[in-house]
Image 1: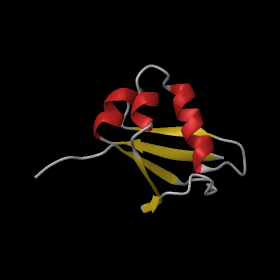
Image 2: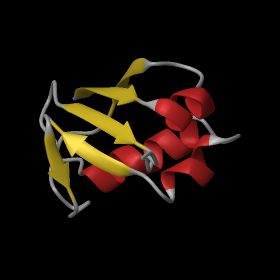
Image 3: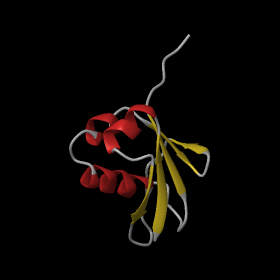
Length: 83
């Protein structure tokens, strides 16, 4: 299956892309996708992934065992600060 991963802020800088398509086996979970992102971008992204939040098709994901579907959109959101 293919999912679309969109990176924001520091995650975008670490991945070096704004968006990419990622191939995963059928039945893959969010955790499987995160492992693949670590493999694809070993230089700076793994450090960022330790502190990010994820949106799956626009909905916050806390359970990384949640299964993915073909065509899903996974947003990678680093912590934001502001005031």
